[in-house]
Each structure stands twice: as structure tokens, then as C-alpha cells.
Image 1: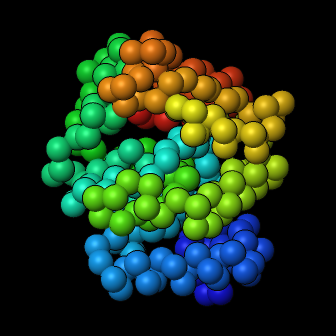
Image 2: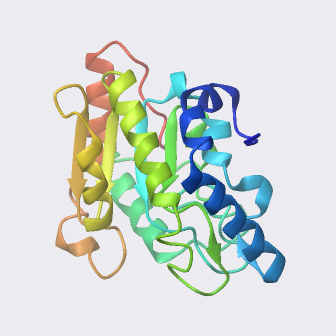
Length: 222
């Protein structure tokens, strides 16, 4: 299949694009877009990959579904458009970021492309969703595809940082070789679980310390 995705990812994932599950997934997603509102916009389905080429990845942050409200999902996990009110999970991510680094945010908008272009792959397990229907595109093939993404990164790269927030993300961690990479696990940043261990987990400083120790430039999180 001729999938429109950044060239290095197209090379690394070419075997996935030729499999029957991906053909079926593509047909399903096309039907969904034809029948009603689906997020993100089609051009942004693979935005996380387009902004963060395979060989530039330093950190992977795993989400679950795209946001399903209007003007929210933009193809990057946990992110929203610049002029969109921050969802509760992203508010909590920013709270932990300020606490962790001990510095006020420079950027307070929710468009996290500033992270993506520095090497942070903001990957949702499912890359599309029907408007106002959480989980509506789960179990259609996206999970198999994103498992392959994680496995390929784990196998072919070294010294990456994987941030797994919540049980759903932790389950996908089964595909990561922990002898080669740093895996940071905590509860999800949603209001339902942030106080159970996400706050105080210090993932941003830990990620940067790991990168610096391996002579790699840290992420400018703020």
C-alpha cells in the first residue's frame, strides 16, 4: 500500500503496510471518515511520525486514543491545537513537568509539536477515533500496527526512553527490551489516577538525565 508517512518510517514499517490486517484497517478507517466525523483530520493521522523520523526518536510517550472532541486531536498523543483549552490529562502533565524541573512553563499551549521535533514520539495506541465515542476504533488493527512500531524501535534503536503512563500503556511495554532502553512507568495523568503516583514520578528529569549520560542532547520540555 502507498501509505503517506515520513520516509524513514515508511521504510521501517513497510512489512506492516503489506499485511492483510492493515488493508482491512485502512478500509475501515476510510468508511468511518465517509460516514461521519472522525478525529484527527486525515492529514494528521501519521503526524507523530512525520514530525519525528525514525532515527531521530529519543523518547516515546504512549497514549491510548486520540481525543474525540472537536478541535482537540491533532495526531500527537496528549496534545491539542494551540487555541484549544487544555484537557485535564495535559494539565496534569504540565503540573508534573513544572514540579519535576522546578521551573515555570515557557510554552503553555497544548500543541506539543515542540517536543515532537526534538525527538519525542507522541504515539497513541489507536490513531483514529469516531467523534464523541471513546474507544470506537479500538480492536480494528491499530494496536497491532503500533505494537510493531514499538517493537521496531526497541529492536533497531538503542538507549531510548519509553514513558508508559497507565495500565494500557504498560501492557504495550511487553514489546520493549529493557536491557537496551529506559522504561519509566507510572499511573496515567488523568484526574482519576494522577494522585496515585503520576505526580512525583519525575519522568522528564529522569529522561533527560538518561539521555545526557549517553551523550545525547536532552529534551527542552518547557
